[in-house]
Image (cartoon, rainbow, N blue to C red; front, side, top):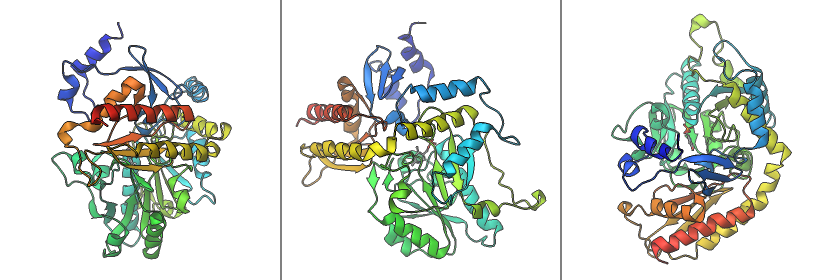
Length: 430
Ligand SMILES: *Cc1c(COP(=O)(O)O)cnc(C)c1O
């Protein structure tokens, strides 16, 4: 079959996530079919190449087609691809659990619960937190504190933690009891007798538009939780695996949560796999004779997928072999300098950076700040135009997002920033 026709087939038969399908299926729209990847580059059906400027929706860490990760997946494939994790274990899942636990000095999070995506890793943490209190003396603790504009995934439970109404469609209230707050000041005013846990995206909220928290806020939150013996759930689905400049965001403020949720970058961005890591204390709260009903009855068919675990182990190996974390400070600084240069533009109001993640706000006017009308779709148009300059990325409203794989070079950083500059100039009329 001719590769070109896949774009037509897609428009006939496929429904895409987070996508207004009328626009997608419009006569004049030719969807990009991504056919190959190499390092930070992706190739489309016409053989054109692009820098993967948002790391394939925030997942890719070491680049595409990495020989080490490819080999690990092939090697595992020759043994077995997937086996049930309900009632059985597997070598790569055991080894990966150990390596993940050892990423935290002192091993405070020594229990690893597998699932297959970020949303389910959040679901597992919520279920564990609520069930823990229910069967360990504090059944009145049935409420979770979540932050304004938070994003924790799209399954009902994870979405009920979310604070972005656009993502909830018509049914805004579902799932768990949630107390929504704007920040630390608001938390301090909350009566905490019913609070089971606080959930947060540490250092930076992604889907909210790459919003950074004030420095020290995470530590303050940890202290608040500790003083009241309330669980702290860190959603590091986006921030995990080096994105912030350290392996995990929580390490920057010396914070140890009760639960950490990891997904996107866990396998280097190769396969869907997630973990919810927690403490011995939480684990022990579920022990007892099965007849007591203290078991966590939660899981998925592809839990602990062996190919995924093999890819994750290889990704951690690449971190060590290629000294990925050691190289990050220089890259983060260079990325920051290049981003700052965008601020000189008339239509760039704000740039927010956390490690190798950035949000760039495009506005009609800076002083006083006037936003573009949503109907102008300025963010989308700029990102589409940037493809002509070899950059692929996806905006959040009028916030442009850059989040390259960590193996990005300085020259590729230049290319990304130059591409955005050209497209902003063209579309906003600098
Ligand atoms: C992407 C994301 C999720 C959801 O992960 P999925 O794998 O898409 O279900 C949850 N939390 C954060 C912070 C994310 O960025």
